[in-house]
Image (cartoon, rainbow, N blue to C red; front, side, top):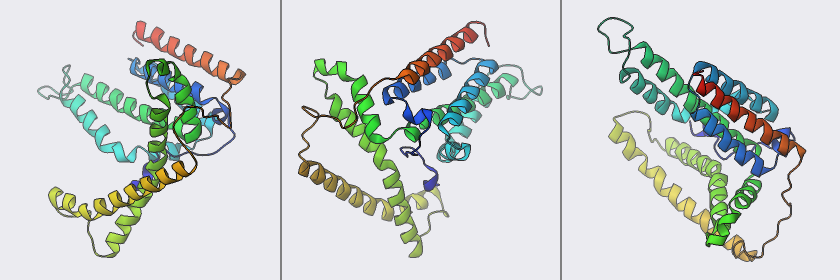
Length: 265
């Protein structure tokens, strides 16, 4: 399951989605989330699914790669669906049952919403390198510099956290494989025994993480890194025609969602 976590992974490519300015993609992700949470009916959900599929096709991300990241959150999706099924009032599917048709419909909608949220937002990291994501986030938050907010430091920390998620997952998988080779069992027994079995993994994982953090700090200091003040970029961010077109499409998407919400679609 650890190998199925794709958060923070970047898939290099030369598609239109890869060439978009990172600021444009960050804004479009916010627009997508706002539109998704304002979808109220089957037609609007179908429209969001269509848009998500179109974005995956443009970015040339395989559905298998996109949906692979859902495996670690299947428990959350199932739990959300069950809670909505049993705690939503309405017309019982069978007389005397607590399961209602409205509960089933709401459970499906909430599950689809979580799936679309994960898949849609993962497309940002799939098509944007950590460095570009840092530059785009820092540029968007640059007005906060007037309020003495450490925008560069915040952007750098978020980008580094995303960058090292796959590395830590790979390290955890190696440690688990080594422990299994020594006879460790992580899959059987009670919940408490399985939790105790994770202790031999956490200790070397923390040690490895601190060592990587120390090596990264030394490397950055050796390259005279002292924060964002006075720094220049090798690649300057510049909006192009495709970015303007993407913004207009995002605005049209959001307007369509609000229109469908108004009429109950």
